[in-house]
Image (cartoon, rainbow over all chains, first blue to last red):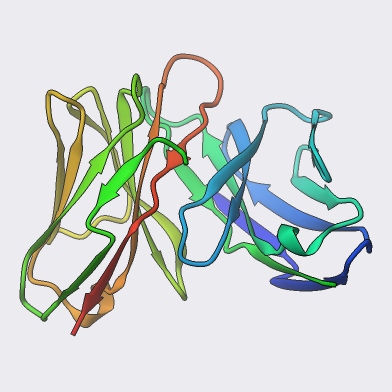
Length: 113
Length: 115
């Protein structure tokens, strides 16, 4: 069974204080690892897809990296508007045409001015 | 705005009742997914449709069913509702296809409250 574990559950940072969120996974054949941002009461917003170990992607203050067992979301000099829950999900190589995501429970990030 | 629309935004009903949630995917997307999000369980995959056909099932209860219509919109039907069915229900869509991963874009969700 595919499993995704995110840590920490919650993280409070001062504005400008860089940090990393962790996503560890076990999956039988990784097709892709996805990062989403979710604001309270809203739908998840797509951030990145990573496909293979060693891959990195960046968007503004966010950078996602991938190894064979985990992914990190690095946040550089965060601002209060980066406060949200960050979700990690994996897509496994299951039956043909089957593309569901298995999500972790998320890391709730609070950035204090 | 992801381009995925869901109606209604909020739904309040009583135990034992039946409700229908509606989703319109992004233009050009053939695949629709339904997810349930509750406080203790996180986002859980329910079911996937591709171009009108069911492709995958997750932890979907027998009281729940879904379908995708020729115009590609989808409906999720929840019946014999219980208090524990109260949650946010999200629809997502993707192009899908072939090799590689695929990005799923989520709608704003329907908040279901069962009293």
